Length: 186
Image 1 (cartoon, rainbow, N blue to C red):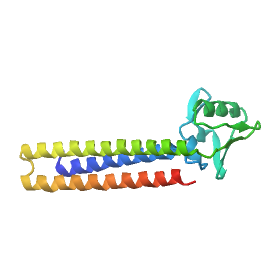
Image 2 (cartoon, rainbow, N blue to C red):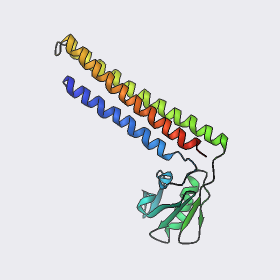
Image 3 (cartoon, rainbow, N blue to C red):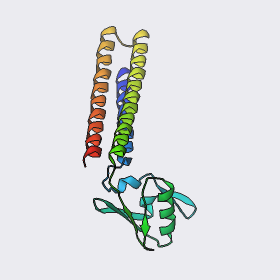
Image 4 (cartoon, one colour):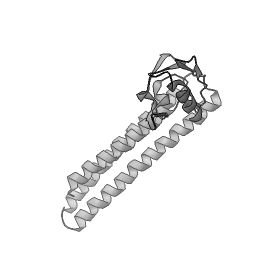
């Protein structure tokens, strides 16, 4: 692997850490209804566990309500059971054809807990980015040691990796602040 490939791989892996953080943050509820809150739920459908959005239409017609319209009436009980089993703090109501989930407002204490969780996810993402930086730097130093690149080239490539790292850490911090503001907004 040459130096450019190492940097390209580092960028890909750092972007992976950003995407993982984004996926985690989407699941954190902010007191506002969004279909993404149910993304982690899988239901039994003809012997297979499938994501909820593959057996029903999930919408948020109001800021504090999620509506699930199963494509098959027999799925209503299964979907409701899986939502309760997921322990998201929701209390689904069904009328036999549609499931409605009212989203309760968050307490101040719960908001603070969620902010701590957001900070933890952001720190995990920062650690992942720093680990990628360390791996890339080690690979680049090995190339220099094996005389495949010069000392000057090594310096330039290490600076490139550091710039990538700084850029990704900045994006992580922005995502964290955005989610924190969203949670604390009453």
